[in-house]
Image (cartoon, rainbow, N blue to C red; front, top):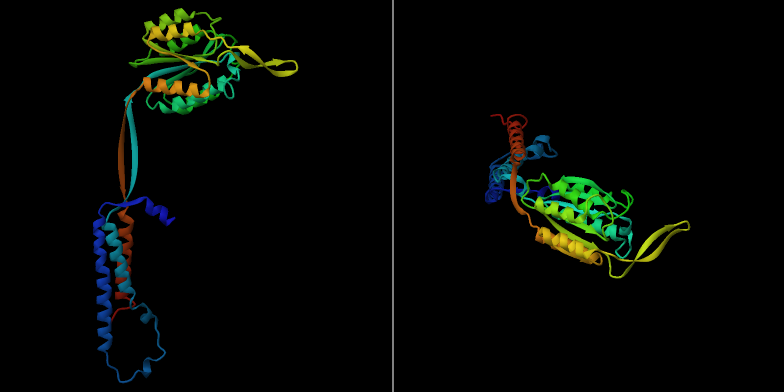
Length: 334
């Protein structure tokens, strides 16, 4: 308990602890003076003092001890003990980012660990944590699209929204145009100088009300930069399929429309990436993180709280005890 308290205390004027050298001088002077007084007392006989150990004799050194303690605490108070509290103020110009994530049935393929969707959720959470001043939103899509979380800087809300993403929330399919256009719509009223959509999918467009090419033109019109990520290994991948006998694993061909994803990214000023495993997906998000840098200024503010008052009060208490003892129980009568 004491060590933890001392770890939090610092002193504004530690050089004043040199005053503590006065304490041994005072002790030496007191002992020397006390011995001189005792040597100067002459009595005819010591018989009358034998066996006497009054409470006054026990307390006769107490005023000096109180004075020593009072001076010790005064020195500590003069050294100005204080606690330090450091605060960081983060300011800067952030980027508005929409994470547009495919939640179609094919995202349960197990060529990633444990599957594509869970791997995508994990890297998205890590990405959100690193973006200090950015507003981020979540859009999910399959056969239709849905805003899972609007633009916000609240990391807890974003993480909760990502954790709640799962297959089966929407009609199955892969409506890339709908997902992208919903993400753009979330950014339409943004006043940020940099507006970004990170679109992740593992398939080919096969539905939706808005075509991918139309969504691409909308992105260009609103100055939205689109990074596209194709998720899936080369060749075939293991897919879980529900049957009457339970879930079986079946190999299915991986089909990603890389031509479309490259066109969307290239024409909007973004970049296309291909993720074939967990490590590759993590590296892609790291690269996007470096490409989309927000201007961040971190200002450290240190606040000190003075703690000398309790020490000064303790010192005053010992001085009052000394005065009380000298003028009451230990008072000398002429």
